[in-house]
Amino acid sequence: EKGAYRHFMEKEIHEQPDSVQHTLSHYLDLVTGRAKVQTLEAGAIDFARIDRIQIVACGTAFYAGQIGRYAFERIAGLPCDVEIASEFRYRSPAVTPGTLAVAVSQSGETADTLASLTWCKGQGLKTAAVVNVHSSSMAREADVLWPTHAGPEIGVASTKAFTAQVAALLALAVAAGVARGRIDGQSEGELVKALFEAPRLIAEALQMDADIRAVAHDLSKATDVLFLGRGAMFPLAMEGALKLKEISYIHAEGYAAGELKHGPIALIDEETPTIALAPLDDVFEKTASNLQEVAARGGPVIMIAPRTAPDPHGAGIRRIHAPDCHPLIAPLVYAVPVQLLAYYTAVQKGTDVDQPRNLAKSVTVE
Ligand code: M6R
Image (tube, rainbow, N blue to C red; front, side, top):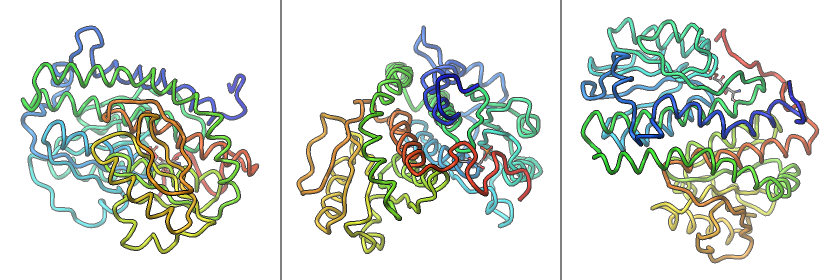
């Protein structure tokens, strides 16, 4: 039931401190500050003995997979590819024997993701499934079930399932880093601590509500919106664009900020808002300079960044303050304003938020 909330989507956005906490607790031990590597090994995946990860997924789960990729490569030194399942399954990919195939899916029933998983199994690869429905086809098909604990998700637009997927993948990347001897006990402790701060900071991000509502009021008049980010904020930018398209029917694109001048900057005018996801990480300055370029061309810029981030020069840059956080968990914290932005824009437009036109919750036929 929706309780005090107007829509399931709104309720599910607000459930994220809990759903992320539950999911993290499956993979990490809050008391010892360690990753539960042994539990994972008991599931027959030894990260020290694989040499590549191939993630397959669709839609929002694909973006979660891309965020996971940054972590697997950076923390565990494990090469990781991520592909849309509908492409992967038909292009005869060249997979190598040491590859672990990972399907990411809320429902565990998406036809293309399931077919890709089955194909990988047929190639003799080890397989794992990051799924929210633990009795689903993918959960049964994969060698190992890596659960998310988001609880049932009713809104067609995925929110809490997405952050649970990201949380699971980030925690698994830490476990992989430990298993592969890429991080020492101290770094492990720091990363686990950072991850367990996510639920509190997600709750803090939910307080951005009023600011986001004001921006959504303006966005609802736009016909095109750009989302920009670098690093893990790039897939989150694409997720933001997908969310806005799905429920408000406004055309939106997510771009890597550095790609702007290779084409999309031609779209910039006074009517095209740019939403920038800019946590204070090692590429903040780069993103900030991209935003100056947009502002210089008259484009309205909304920069979501912590209060402590310096102001980029340039008129027209409006700021929304996000909580300060460790860069590892920025995709979890920044997912909140991104989701709220889509939600309030759709509410402003009066669309059917929980049941957007033409969409089904689970795509079980291709
Ligand atoms: O159940 P799955 O996670 O496999 O679903 C994948 C996509 O169909 C799904 O994420 C879709 O993109 C959502 N409507 C996004 O909000």
